[in-house]
Image (cartoon, rainbow, N blue to C red; front, side, top):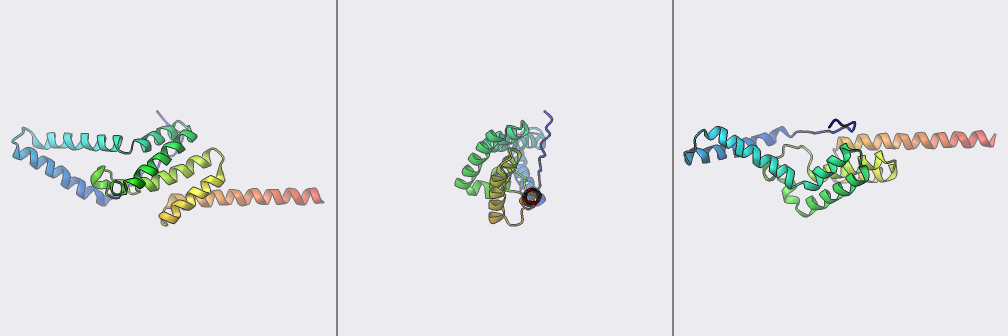
Amino acid sequence: MASNVPVVKQIAWMSIIPQLIILFIIIMLFVQLKVPNPPIIGAIVYWTCSIALRYFVPKSHQEGMKFTKQQEFEKAIVSFKKSYDFFTKYRWVDNNRYLTLLSSSKMCYREMALCNIAFCYSQIGKGTNAIEYYSLVLEEYPENGLAKSGLAILNSLKDQSQNSSNEELIKTDS
């Protein structure tokens, strides 16, 4: 299903190295077990594990992305908050996502959840909440470009709105 909602995926290219090592270990295991076509079987096992881990472990995140793409932002916020809570409780899974989830994402799931919550709030016209969440992202992840951009846009819109209100007041006072 095509979506009009922008999705950003940043890749941590260095994460590919440990993942290739895991793939190599799986293939070598199949070589030792004398399984026919160990590279093909190993690649299939690795791919299956990768898909399963990224689908079942960050379930709330996947659900939030689905709701976001369907532009059901209130539901997405609830899912992303659950994702944030899960990865806060199991921080080690998120911090080691290259190995635990076989994920090459540059951003951790906690960071993604906060950015997505802020984005969803901005889409339903709750700019104050969006600013709050983008600010929270920058407190925890000061180099996050999405939060910096989101805040800049929201603050400029807020400034523009205040300037328009001031101009209206000036006109009515005259």
